Image (tube, rainbow, N blue to C red; front, side, top):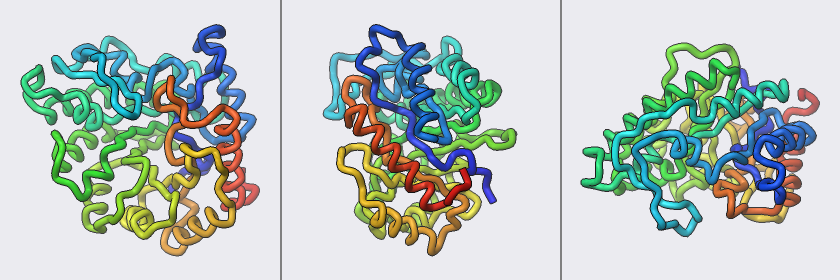
Length: 328
């Protein structure tokens, strides 16, 4: 059985920033966030991304070779372009992670943008790197080094986010092919040694496509040697279930069962019926539950209010207790 006991009540990492963040500073806000997560009985603790502008900043703010533009997409993410192959100027988020380990005994978790996602969204033909694949491989080296540093600092759960990956299962478009994407992600997550309890996770997207080809999904999991996959289970569709069915038995699954984009709380019986459907073919002892995505992947554009976020996280904890009783 996989060692997921301590990570069953999970979240993606990005939390709604406190209204007084500018006044109290990121350090105090993170300390308050740790207390908040402990009160919610979360089995992971993050810094909420409070020190950062968005979920990509953990890498983009700490490496050379990228230029910020004045453009922004509909999701609020400012566009960055790669002008040279990236080089790290030092630790990316390891210093903040080390503070987390000193604040609580609960497992510290760090979320990072995946190298393939960054390469696909920052590569500009003719501007620097010869190809998106070359850019992705350089980013993978940087992120892999950071993962090794995080593990040495006591971090036991690291999640790479690539919101584009599920969409690539049935599409040949994009600056990175699926094969290039898998190769780049594999470079980042592959560890020669994993201390006890360490899990490297991948979130391949916030929602499932309309349909999932089982062979393509199996190819995805075979191509990226991650321990844990964070997969959507918001509707209980066959596509969502097919993504989980294709997951090898030796991989953990974290089920995104609570919608982080709407304030209304999910009906517990409805969610439990979806989880039971997964339990018909997947051992739930190797599972966890979480919201579907981060609550504020962009600091200035939280998806919910702080109180709505709290209620959603309480619901995740409640669902975990419905699934696993008083094991916590």
